Length: 215
Picture (cartoon, rainbow, N blue to C red):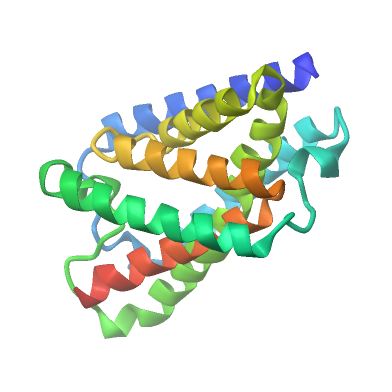
């Protein structure tokens, strides 16, 4: 499984490099980007490309085994760990948020609610809360975790979390993203399934989008 691991690692590092380069050249992000249908199209194209690449890499091995597309060993354990992730992230965000302001850097927090563009916001929100978590969990806690696991459980948890954070191309938000990725990796390792991580990730994204326009 060395070739899939090399290809996956190379893809993630290249994607992270492009993400950081894009942030450096684009300047200040548009805080109203989620009010635009062009953002919806961009998300669909970007994540379709990611999905195709990851699907292809996984095809060099036992694809569904690498993705861990199976029922978790315990939904109760998954729920307990999920609560722990939420509490941990809330504490970490409360401590680091006033200093790092991760929402401003990512550029997905509108300055105010715009009812006229509600449809676009909801459309983008559905993608961010459903499609994005599915693809990212298959990429990092599915394929990536499975390929890294041969080097140890905690190696897979920590490295997949670190690369998950780097792939977003953010600096101020990096500690929170890495912590979230590690939490999701721990969840994946304890229930042997990618599905609970998709749910936690999706709810986290949805809550962030709702909070952005109601706070």
